[in-house]
Image (cartoon, rainbow, N blue to C red; front, top):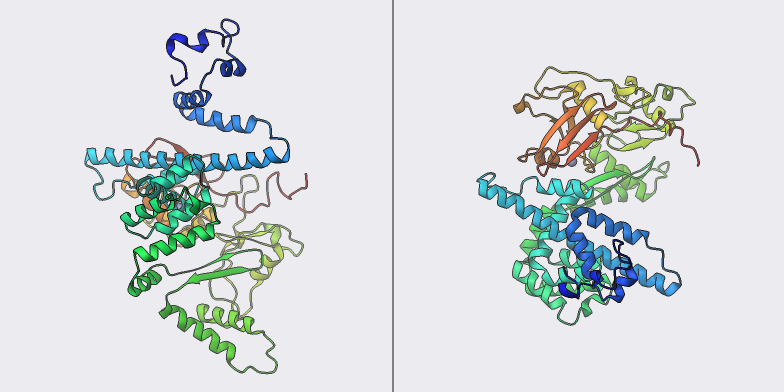
Length: 470
Ligand SMILES: [Zn+2]
């Protein structure tokens, strides 16, 4: 036992025990000179996971610090606790992955990718998306293997979570020896690098990185090609925002096409601003349709029967995107007479009790046609808990290779990454019937189970509709 006293003069056998059989009081332990820090550490080590939960609730059970000075001190100390917790998670995550790898290497399985599926499990444990789980694991490896001083700084609460992330992202693309060198340099001057803001810390790391590895122009060009992306997301009932990052050879022609359209002389009746012309041009180039016309792409709408009337109130669901106001839903449903929208789903009403859609079956090996549309609407996002990724593949809950059938019950919409993760050795999934909405159980290789439940279709039912002020 890690206390200040030797076993022969154990304080628990002496003055600290006030009455025989009763737990010693805190004050008595302090008086007896017990090392309470060591005792808490021992408690956590002996009680395992419960010990960690106990510390978390103990911190929250303690009263708030009164007075402005202690309050601010307490905020700083809690920040140190957060970073120290993260440092512990880093070590724990790396140890978990190392164990899985060692077991598979010993068994001679999955030689090419012995860590398969580990990041998916980490994501589930942290309640984050698989992308965030993978990036957590990458950051953890980097900290544990190449940035020992920074990790020590996190453990002892000398630096913040945000500062540690700046270090990690600043050295990520460097060679191992240069990462280690920067880690050492940062701590050379008694962490003076961490006394300024994160922008200065970032600049300093960037400056060292440039000096250590002056990247050739070709490298940067390759990087620009590799990191290209373009994406959009709905930000409210009325707006979708787009953004992206493109290499010069793609970005410049796009920019030019938009600038040409903006600079073109316009008729006197055209009172659009330059920004509006740019937006219309981008729309026209991408969809091949003139702005203002009805769009020949399919828009799925899920609504209650009463949404088809003028005084409708329930929001309308656009699967995978979010909700629209009832009025906007009706307007889209009406569409343009020349080119009506595909409103395939307007008759797919939702069971009021469970929020479940009507089911369909298919006899083929692939999810096709109506069943395919149906699953996408039913699931909206990737069905791995916390993932929220876009549905990229329709997956058999029980694989076809294990006699899984191509039915609505045995289906789930998944993002590519999750569909791959579920093939990891020891990963099992099975449908659950009678759960109201569609559901299946996931058992991970480390024997943790999670339930994936299809989202409730539109909120026009249940006790929380319409929303009431409390
Ligand atoms: Zn996913």
